[in-house]
Length: 402
Image (cartoon, rainbow, N blue to C red; front, side, top):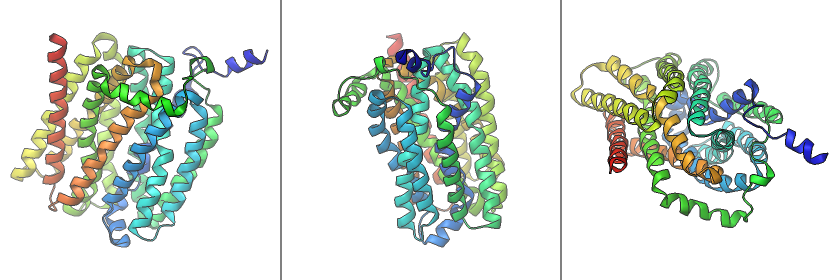
């Protein structure tokens, strides 16, 4: 009888409903929300904390990258729900620490701590989808999650811009602490997706050996590297755009959110379209087309900023095209990679997320060290790494043909 009751609590493809999707989407949104909401405040934070605000993103991504590698094997052995509860507690504590910070060193430290909890949400959301669904269906579900989660980076900068108008940037992190608390409460309605009989039986220590197996698995790594390189470019815009739009082009911080939000609307539209495309076309084909379009847009952006033509309008249009392709690139590459290693989905999702979001460390450091006060630095970083991602797709196609 007890065994029957325990099995009822485990999710299946048939008994997951709207609430399940909404909670997973909110978990997926934690990364973007944790960063995007204070983007309009970054110039003010730099002045107030007497340091480079880009380092707060660097610190967050360092914590995000390292912590995922720890939580992945833990979730494969202990299940998905317990790590999620622990993660929300860490996120709330880190958010409070950020709100109370008085200098750049303090806030970078607490951003690392905050990321240790925030990383669990998107990592386990991907793993839970793979627990329940196979390749094509998983790509559809990931596209659905991306459509819903895209609300966060739309609302985040808009909300952050309004908060900065009436309060200091500290209030933004108090709000994140409240959101984290509400998310903790919502987890009580989230079922387990990894039943006891499917969990990794080896010790957690030995489970870390999965990462070496994954790194040697070319079929898995080729998809992972594609999305990783693309996200280096994406984070170049996320980190650099407040200074390009607000400082260089003198856009009001409260209006910056609209320029950022339009890109997410494009992502949502392409994600919705991608749900139908994955039923008719191979994931590899969709990924190749999407990354080539993104690379073309990024190269045009770099050339225009170098030649100083087109102004803010051309930047906005090129970035819109680039970001819209994320609706296909992230879903197809992640689904294809996870399909290669379903037996260790937690560790695989952790490695994907670690490389994907950890790639932003490269962007934020390059911007902090090499920015010349113009949009050029942001643009060439985007172009360089998107082209590198496109080359990975071409390399994949050549290997497949061979």
